[in-house]
Length: 165
Image (tube, rainbow, N blue to C red; front, side, top):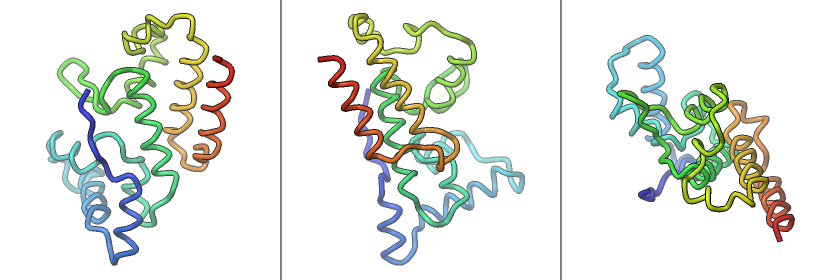
């Protein structure tokens, strides 16, 4: 897995500094995707959309939100649990990690097919692993209002840590 530095909270700083070209280019990409021009390549779309870390509403909403960062953090948790990058290769196409996990849940895939193989060695920690997976999925909820705050995420992770001791 190769780490990437992304725009965690930088959009807000750019807005404060007098406008965000990233948000403006995202809005243009969203308009093109929603019917005006459907000829954006996957590579360009992936780059413009933040490589799977950007909250879905970031394309539509001009005012940045802390919930965008919660979404990005959730993607990172999911990467750690699955051992997969934020964009997953599925056959000849790509889907973001959140969609891939939702697909696995809908298809009732066994947990071992979703988890990072290195975590399979920790079968005795299955309850904690599932707990982190649930926290990650809560963070990437499609509705920003239903995502937890980072305080709640921290509290939930600490509870898991304490219960595993």
